[in-house]
Amino acid sequence: MTQRVRKAIIPAGGLGTRFLPATKAQPKEMLPLIDKPAIQYIVEEAVRSGIDSIVIVSGRHKRAIEDHFDKSAELEDELEERGNAEMLAVVREISQLADIYYVRQKEPLGLGHAVLCARRFIGDEPFAVLLGDDILMSEPPCLKQMIEVYEERQSSVIAVMEVPWDQTHKYGIVDIGGSLEVVATVKDLVEKPAPGEAPSNSAVVGRYVLEPAIFELLERAVPGKAGEIQLTDSLRQLNERNALTALRFEGRRYDVGDKLGFVQATIDLALEREDLGEDIKRYLLEKLPLLR
Ligand code: G1P
Image (cartoon, rainbow, N blue to C red):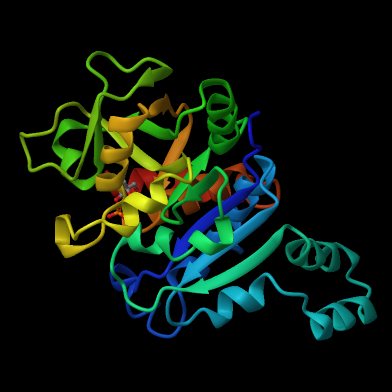
């Protein structure tokens, strides 16, 4: 019988060096896109995909993340007293989103190691991994589509999208032995191939639905690229036992771990907002001719 995918891991232990000094005393996952911390978008995608328990694997500075998803009694009292029902509902909803647990990754040994840190929480069932730097916009959510594919094919699923060839060295790259269909069987995969050595331009975006068998492989993993325990290396071994499925992601992806991606996400999200969209559009149109 198929086990339902109900748990997810969100690794959040990175140092956020690309966003210093903003990340000197707060986790990069708490940087807001407009008025919502980046990690909340990720949690919301997980919840909309049917996940009910989430473990956040964090490093130092986890307090702000924990406080954010906790009930905030004083703030709620204050908003109630002021009669700000709208904001009260927003704040209350955050603490009721999902059951969130925390595990600490004591040393920054890589993504594969971060996933391994959540092993006891996951146990012997399939689970999702969502990377905080990748904000994916699609309807239905990317993870929801992946879970459906997992249930159908009974093999681990990774989300992929085509990237420019000169960017392949920044990603895990999959070889599917042909053009990228919506659902494809993975032949092989490689973490951040050197320029000119990528087997394709189909890149892994930060969403995975994995069988628990990955844990034994991670347990035995040796450091790979950048001296870190790479999830991709263990996925490669898993692929030899039970071929992975690649699901082509169709939607918008922002790399909010990168300054340009962060600003692009902010602009696009602002343009879509009812309370801001028109004003931002007017501002951009006024500004554009001056930039030519
Ligand atoms: C990680 C993974 C890589 C994947 C990427 C997606 O790399 O190791 O395989 O393509 O996320 O964002 P990172 O960007 O954390 O270095």
